[in-house]
Image 1 (cartoon, rainbow over the protein chains, first blue to last red):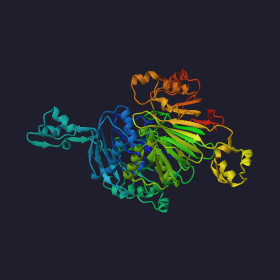
Image 2 (cartoon, rainbow over the protein chains, first blue to last red):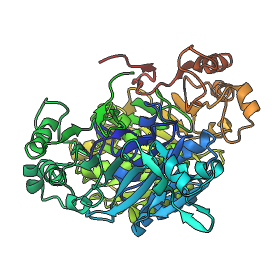
Image 3 (cartoon, one colour):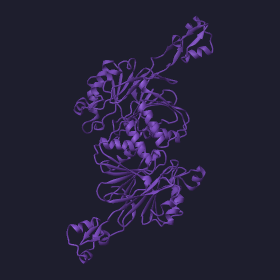
Image 4 (cartoon, each protein chain N blue to C red):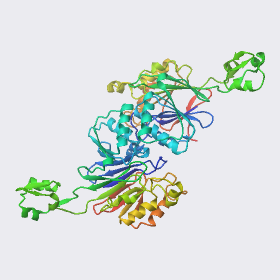
Length: 320
Length: 320
């Protein structure tokens, strides 16, 4: 599972950071998922190897413009690139209402179906290789985190157990391996009972804007990675008396409290200068987070790609 | 008067061309006007010296997404940059309806007033230094051209005439020079009668999508520059059986018929490769237009800036 950051700036774009957008690529094949879609997300996609044709679903954390104003243009471009496969959009109700108003007023017709799933009902959504759950966050408007968990990672059938149960070799074995439950001689057999995994499933929690990281305690159980906004430093957050966002220390302290192996911070206020140039600097946020967090800490940059490998280790990919 | 092209691609962005957006800068001061606002226009503005604070008005040619999907984000960013001055938006009725739906659904509140002027009524709009008129075009949806004419260019008072009429030196002279009419001893005196101009007013016609350039015959009278889309070559336009767009030859033939001094083509289908690389190439469009047009021909590139000087000559600016 790879993460490609398409935008890491809060509120407004800067010369080097776009507003929110994050691609989650499957480890196999070209399929990918998009979390948030600020204006210019489709432009950032042009700078990656991602294709609008192999996009499987879009998840929107909340209705604020820097997280969704890129949706109409991205959908229009997918249409112009002749996408035909249906597309799932998991988003708060307001996003659906806005998109439908946009289709009507701007005369945008899509040649593919949209399947809307309302985040406000905290849905669990299953895809071929990934299962997604939804967690409510604390922000000025309804806002959500999405947790992506790998399904059936490299499952191996327990042959001994299959023989004991008298399951005949053939299609039934295949169904179990694919995670389906079966029935043999009137008895229901669940796939989990016959599968062993070479590694624990990879699990990534991607949060929207949120001033209470502790709401993610349950979602983070068994997760290797949390991606969370750190809009400000602690001092600046207090000064700005901002409601609805987290500071770097608050997020890092939470990650430490649940012993999360990898924390990726993003959604930085545009006032923070890249690198260590200028003041305040992104490095201020890094130092603040590192002072309370003992895991592996990353501060996302636009177009940076991270790979979460089968052992559960996250590392930034460099070059080709 | 300067033109800064913010996007020159039709329909979808490419790696080197954004969708439609064109800035018209006043020759004096920082004031500027924006014609069309495709997604990512605010990102392009970050790459220029233009500021959202000194933007005087936005003109939208029509409701299609590649001409207006950048509006919500641009307005939101102007708000976050603390703009307070009212902003005029001249646009078809659908744009206003879409923006109002966007404000409501995405909870976007602006700290400055918007003054909407409906293009469908072909308004004439006056600003301090510029007068703008509207012309209806032929496209799949209501679509307009906007003609920008310089007001009172370097007016000089005719002192001799003022003395003959017995207008006393003082505030009245100033009013006449600013283009205001006055009354002296019961007689109404129009400013035009007492002013001479060192050069004819500069006049630029900026058209939206349009398959009948001839509709611009009247607007082009006295204009030095026409900016018009040339989405395809003639051969490709016939092949694509596209409705509502022009090909390079059709626009150039029209410009020739009205003896227009300068023609700037833009809004190229993304299939055309930059420069002379690949096929089809932007150069194909240049050759097609040049074969029927004897004036000065330009094919716009993103972030290229052109200056229309007082003599009515248009030239691309190079470097600082």
